[in-house]
Amino acid sequence: MNPVPGAPMILPVRARLCALLCALLASGCSLPLNGKGEIAAYDFGTAAATREGGPRLRQPLLVYEVSGPAWMDTASIHYRLAYRDASRPQAYAGSRWVMPPAALLTNRLRQRLAGAGGGVILPTDGLRAAASLRVELDEFTQVFDAENRSRAVLRLRASLVGSRSLIAQKAFSVDKAAASQDAEGGVRALTAASDEVLEQLLDWVAVSMKD
Image (cartoon, rainbow, N blue to C red; front, side, top):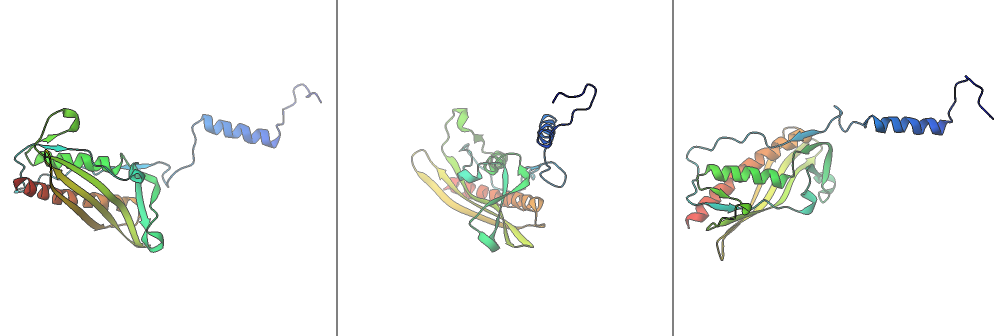
Protein backbone atom coordinates (compact mmCIF):
# COMPACT_ATOMS: atom_id res chain seq x y z
CA MET A 1 0.00 0.00 0.00
CA ASN A 2 1.40 3.38 -0.97
CA PRO A 3 1.70 5.98 1.80
CA VAL A 4 -0.73 8.89 1.75
CA PRO A 5 1.05 12.08 0.71
CA GLY A 6 1.76 14.34 3.73
CA ALA A 7 0.91 11.64 6.30
CA PRO A 8 3.57 10.80 8.99
CA MET A 9 5.49 7.55 8.40
CA ILE A 10 4.98 5.00 11.19
CA LEU A 11 7.94 2.61 11.54
CA PRO A 12 7.55 -0.96 12.80
CA VAL A 13 8.72 -1.57 16.41
CA ARG A 14 11.83 -3.46 15.29
CA ALA A 15 12.87 -0.67 12.94
CA ARG A 16 12.41 1.94 15.67
CA LEU A 17 14.58 -0.06 18.09
CA CYS A 18 17.31 -0.41 15.45
CA ALA A 19 17.21 3.32 14.78
CA LEU A 20 17.51 4.09 18.50
CA LEU A 21 20.47 1.74 18.87
CA CYS A 22 22.26 3.31 15.92
CA ALA A 23 21.70 6.78 17.37
CA LEU A 24 23.20 5.75 20.70
CA LEU A 25 26.26 4.21 19.04
CA ALA A 26 26.76 7.23 16.84
CA SER A 27 26.66 9.61 19.80
CA GLY A 28 29.17 7.54 21.78
CA CYS A 29 26.76 6.76 24.59
CA SER A 30 27.57 3.86 26.91
CA LEU A 31 26.37 2.39 30.15
CA PRO A 32 28.22 3.78 33.19
CA LEU A 33 30.90 1.52 34.69
CA ASN A 34 30.58 2.94 38.18
CA GLY A 35 28.38 5.29 40.15
CA LYS A 36 29.98 8.36 38.57
CA GLY A 37 29.76 7.03 35.02
CA GLU A 38 33.55 6.96 34.53
CA ILE A 39 36.56 4.76 35.20
CA ALA A 40 38.75 5.80 38.15
CA ALA A 41 42.46 5.43 37.30
CA TYR A 42 45.11 5.13 40.03
CA ASP A 43 48.89 5.11 40.36
CA PHE A 44 51.15 4.99 43.44
CA GLY A 45 51.09 8.75 43.93
CA THR A 46 54.14 10.83 44.82
CA ALA A 47 57.02 8.82 46.22
CA ALA A 48 58.16 9.57 49.74
CA ALA A 49 61.48 11.34 50.17
CA THR A 50 64.56 9.16 50.56
CA ARG A 51 64.85 8.37 54.23
CA GLU A 52 67.74 9.96 56.07
CA GLY A 53 70.46 7.52 56.99
CA GLY A 54 69.11 4.92 54.57
CA PRO A 55 71.30 2.44 52.68
CA ARG A 56 73.67 3.73 50.03
CA LEU A 57 74.79 1.91 46.89
CA ARG A 58 78.41 2.37 45.87
CA GLN A 59 78.22 1.09 42.31
CA PRO A 60 75.77 1.20 39.38
CA LEU A 61 73.17 -1.53 39.13
CA LEU A 62 71.49 -2.88 36.00
CA VAL A 63 67.78 -3.01 36.82
CA TYR A 64 65.46 -5.04 34.59
CA GLU A 65 61.74 -4.45 34.36
CA VAL A 66 59.68 -6.22 37.01
CA SER A 67 57.98 -9.28 35.53
CA GLY A 68 54.78 -11.00 36.60
CA PRO A 69 52.27 -13.72 35.67
CA ALA A 70 50.32 -13.30 32.43
CA TRP A 71 46.96 -12.78 34.19
CA MET A 72 48.43 -9.75 35.97
CA ASP A 73 49.70 -8.13 32.77
CA THR A 74 46.80 -5.67 32.61
CA ALA A 75 45.84 -2.42 34.33
CA SER A 76 43.06 -4.18 36.28
CA ILE A 77 42.87 -3.86 40.07
CA HIS A 78 42.54 -7.45 41.21
CA TYR A 79 40.94 -8.83 44.34
CA ARG A 80 40.20 -12.27 45.80
CA LEU A 81 37.23 -13.32 47.93
CA ALA A 82 39.17 -15.65 50.20
CA TYR A 83 36.07 -16.48 52.24
CA ARG A 84 34.48 -17.92 49.08
CA ASP A 85 37.16 -19.00 46.62
CA ALA A 86 40.71 -17.69 47.09
CA SER A 87 41.86 -19.38 43.87
CA ARG A 88 39.85 -17.04 41.62
CA PRO A 89 41.25 -13.52 41.08
CA GLN A 90 38.64 -10.96 40.04
CA ALA A 91 38.87 -7.36 38.82
CA TYR A 92 36.98 -4.18 39.71
CA ALA A 93 34.82 -2.98 36.82
CA GLY A 94 34.96 0.77 37.41
CA SER A 95 38.55 1.21 38.63
CA ARG A 96 41.97 0.45 37.21
CA TRP A 97 45.67 1.25 37.48
CA VAL A 98 47.17 3.67 34.97
CA MET A 99 49.48 0.83 33.88
CA PRO A 100 50.06 -2.81 34.89
CA PRO A 101 51.27 -3.27 38.50
CA ALA A 102 54.64 -4.64 37.35
CA ALA A 103 55.29 -1.43 35.41
CA LEU A 104 54.30 0.71 38.40
CA LEU A 105 56.68 -1.28 40.61
CA THR A 106 59.46 -0.97 38.02
CA ASN A 107 59.23 2.82 38.02
CA ARG A 108 59.09 3.03 41.81
CA LEU A 109 61.98 0.58 42.23
CA ARG A 110 64.28 2.42 39.85
CA GLN A 111 63.41 5.71 41.49
CA ARG A 112 64.31 4.39 44.95
CA LEU A 113 67.54 2.77 43.75
CA ALA A 114 68.60 5.94 41.95
CA GLY A 115 68.02 7.86 45.16
CA ALA A 116 70.39 5.52 46.97
CA GLY A 117 73.30 6.99 45.03
CA GLY A 118 74.77 4.09 43.11
CA GLY A 119 73.15 4.79 39.76
CA VAL A 120 70.60 2.81 37.77
CA ILE A 121 71.38 1.37 34.34
CA LEU A 122 68.56 0.30 32.03
CA PRO A 123 68.81 -2.67 29.64
CA THR A 124 68.33 -0.26 26.73
CA ASP A 125 71.34 1.87 27.75
CA GLY A 126 73.78 -0.64 26.31
CA LEU A 127 76.11 -0.25 29.30
CA ARG A 128 77.66 -2.90 31.52
CA ALA A 129 77.34 -3.25 35.27
CA ALA A 130 79.01 -5.51 37.80
CA ALA A 131 75.58 -6.68 39.03
CA SER A 132 71.99 -6.77 37.81
CA LEU A 133 68.67 -7.00 39.61
CA ARG A 134 65.68 -9.03 38.45
CA VAL A 135 62.33 -8.95 40.29
CA GLU A 136 59.40 -11.31 39.71
CA LEU A 137 55.97 -10.32 41.02
CA ASP A 138 53.97 -13.29 42.28
CA GLU A 139 50.95 -11.66 43.95
CA PHE A 140 49.51 -8.15 43.93
CA THR A 141 45.89 -8.30 45.04
CA GLN A 142 43.37 -7.10 47.59
CA VAL A 143 42.32 -10.19 49.54
CA PHE A 144 38.94 -10.22 51.32
CA ASP A 145 39.08 -12.52 54.35
CA ALA A 146 35.47 -11.50 55.07
CA GLU A 147 32.93 -9.15 53.53
CA ASN A 148 34.00 -6.37 55.90
CA ARG A 149 37.74 -7.12 56.13
CA SER A 150 40.42 -7.05 53.44
CA ARG A 151 44.17 -6.60 53.04
CA ALA A 152 46.71 -5.92 50.37
CA VAL A 153 48.91 -8.92 49.60
CA LEU A 154 52.21 -8.40 47.79
CA ARG A 155 54.62 -11.25 47.07
CA LEU A 156 57.77 -11.00 44.96
CA ARG A 157 61.16 -12.63 44.42
CA ALA A 158 64.39 -10.75 43.78
CA SER A 159 67.61 -12.06 42.26
CA LEU A 160 70.89 -10.18 42.36
CA VAL A 161 73.11 -11.53 39.59
CA GLY A 162 76.83 -10.98 38.97
CA SER A 163 78.63 -11.30 35.64
CA ARG A 164 78.72 -15.10 35.84
CA SER A 165 76.97 -16.17 39.02
CA LEU A 166 74.04 -15.58 41.35
CA ILE A 167 75.03 -13.19 44.15
CA ALA A 168 71.87 -13.48 46.24
CA GLN A 169 68.19 -14.32 45.99
CA LYS A 170 65.30 -13.64 48.36
CA ALA A 171 61.50 -13.77 48.54
CA PHE A 172 59.65 -10.78 50.01
CA SER A 173 56.12 -10.70 51.41
CA VAL A 174 54.06 -7.81 52.79
CA ASP A 175 50.43 -7.67 53.94
CA LYS A 176 48.66 -4.37 54.67
CA ALA A 177 45.15 -3.98 56.06
CA ALA A 178 42.80 -1.96 53.83
CA ALA A 179 40.96 0.97 55.41
CA SER A 180 37.90 0.50 53.20
CA GLN A 181 36.44 -2.51 51.42
CA ASP A 182 36.51 -1.14 47.89
CA ALA A 183 38.91 -0.37 45.05
CA GLU A 184 40.19 2.82 46.66
CA GLY A 185 40.93 1.00 49.91
CA GLY A 186 42.74 -1.70 47.95
CA VAL A 187 44.79 0.85 46.02
CA ARG A 188 45.93 2.67 49.15
CA ALA A 189 46.86 -0.58 50.89
CA LEU A 190 48.70 -1.94 47.84
CA THR A 191 50.61 1.34 47.48
CA ALA A 192 51.69 1.20 51.12
CA ALA A 193 52.68 -2.46 50.73
CA SER A 194 54.72 -1.59 47.62
CA ASP A 195 56.64 1.17 49.38
CA GLU A 196 57.36 -1.11 52.34
CA VAL A 197 58.57 -4.04 50.25
CA LEU A 198 60.77 -1.78 48.12
CA GLU A 199 62.43 -0.41 51.26
CA GLN A 200 63.13 -3.99 52.35
CA LEU A 201 64.45 -4.77 48.88
CA LEU A 202 66.74 -1.73 48.88
CA ASP A 203 68.20 -2.70 52.26
CA TRP A 204 68.80 -6.24 51.00
CA VAL A 205 70.50 -5.07 47.79
CA ALA A 206 72.79 -2.71 49.70
CA VAL A 207 73.88 -5.46 52.10
CA SER A 208 74.27 -8.09 49.36
CA MET A 209 76.45 -5.87 47.20
CA LYS A 210 78.84 -5.25 50.10
CA ASP A 211 79.64 -8.96 50.45
